[in-house]
Image (cartoon, rainbow, N blue to C red; front, side, top):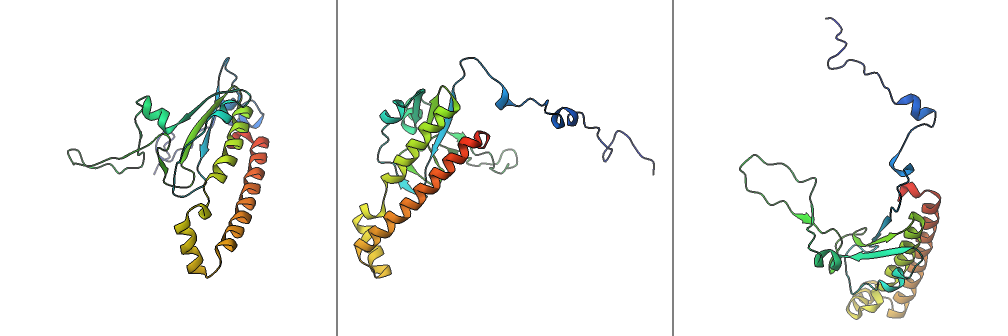
Length: 194
């Protein structure tokens, strides 16, 4: 068998390595565009929850924040959903239903990390700061102890008082809030991870 220098399995000469290894690479994050705005997504910490309301006023008042969009805004402006990118391709002519995902959650979140709002600001750091403040508010909005039925069920299942459940929950939320604040400080050090 003869070696083919242009076919399958042939070595491909890399041309980008030199500039990347010497720090000469250009990345989208390095580009500075005049009057560009930056956005960060507020994500739900809850696996399944109803959105009782989103107060945008505090976030809009944050320094540099240009806009805050919610699922209601997306719906009002007539934007459709995002097509499911991993839906299997069926043979031509087959009937199928390819669901769409909402751009931002409307009325309820369906999984932890579901997109709840979009914060747009003049700089990435301002958007991240407004996002972190917003995440703190979302974190404290929904507690198990606010729902008497859930509280009663937990009390019976684990045979502990309602007050003890409230204490455990407060401690758990404090730990989660501390972990989120640590994550937020890591994001400031590594903004490319956002």
